Amino acid sequence: MFGFFIVRIKIIDTDINDLQLLLFMFFNCLLKLSTFEDYLKVIQKMDNNFPFSGFGSLSVHGGHQQDPNYAHLTPIYATSTFVYDDAEQGMRRFSGQEEGYIYSRWGNPTFTEAELKIAAMESYGINDADGNPLHVKALLHASGMAAITTLLLLNLKAGDKVLTHYSLYGGTEEILRNVLPSLGIDSIITDLRDIDKAAEVLKANPAIRMVYLETPANPTIQCVDIEVLSKLAKQYNCIVACDNTFATPYLQQPFRYNVDFVVHSTTKFLNGHGTAIGGVLLGKDETLMKSKGNTMRKTLGGTSNPFDTFLLINGMKTLEIRMERHCSNAMEVAHFLTKHSSVAKVNYNGLPDHPDHAVAIKQMKHPGAMMSFELKKGFQGGVDFMNKLKMCTRTVSLGTCDTLLCHPASMTHFSVPKDAREKYGITDGLIRMSVGIENIQDIIADLDQAL
Image (cartoon, rainbow, N blue to C red; front, side, top):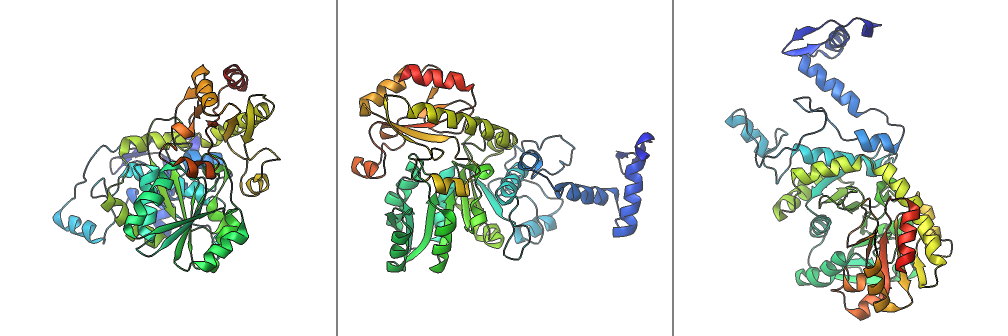
């Protein structure tokens, strides 16, 4: 009933109504709050703990904290450094005795909201071993590759090995093949869909420190069983990391299957509009992430920037509704392609005859928006097809609102030797497709005329 009578009162330069005053008096008695600002902090904390009933509300509101100047949206904090009230506060900040921002390579308020939102989405509805809500720590990076670099250098040293599978993102493949060996870190690549083979490799190689997964994988859309491989890896005391870029936390949550780290290229579906480059590393060990993990990120210099982060935050708010449309369109496109005479093969986990269909259905809410298909005319067929597209976009990357197509053999996996590329299923005529949110009739019409 208090809402019917609003009286403006001035307390510590803050306009409040009578309901707020009564709440302040209540909390003052209960919690011995000394100022109205202390009351606001309690209310803001209560708002942050609101029990969202679904992922959509979480993606809109998760991670948001009231801006000190009451901006509706968290602003772009375009500042390189932060100031202190006095020298003593600076000392407390640098010594870690007081939380606060120091330098934007180390942290920034705009970064904080994005990190909290992504962490909330990846851990939504998951409990830890003690039955309590799972908490994970996210570290925002300048790119997905920067996040992967932090992950690898944080956990591996000379003499360690990484066990992974065929058909990885080209950049990941390159860092495993060309960068880590110079640091004394080698990789073992095998088909991790063969669990017996994976167990055999782990048993024979005690130097394996990390099992690195990417599922669905780029660009053949292979899926590996996160739960089974995570359990197997733990038997050999291995760290498990998973690239969740293709699926997003809306469709798949690797932490549900006891992985230790999750990485994303936020450039893709999380941003959703192709407006900014970014990446994120998330870990269950919050102490490690806040200490050594954050030190590794800021020392390597792979931190994001406030403007790109602002774009990411706004993109993530529509993640659920975008993914619903992406996925429904993808299913129709896959059925269209399977019937086309120019297409030799369709790689889409939503099709019942796909070898990884059962695994995808087990661990994903929907098979997703990514697919690839092989053209019967090989390399030249791929070139001709790409040149004839009229509405769909010829480009690398994925996860934007428009439908994107690329030719991996000449683009994303150009640096991968042909014999290795074909071993991973990346043939000369393979086309990768990120299905957009346009009207499905227009997507299919453009594909049909180009084919």
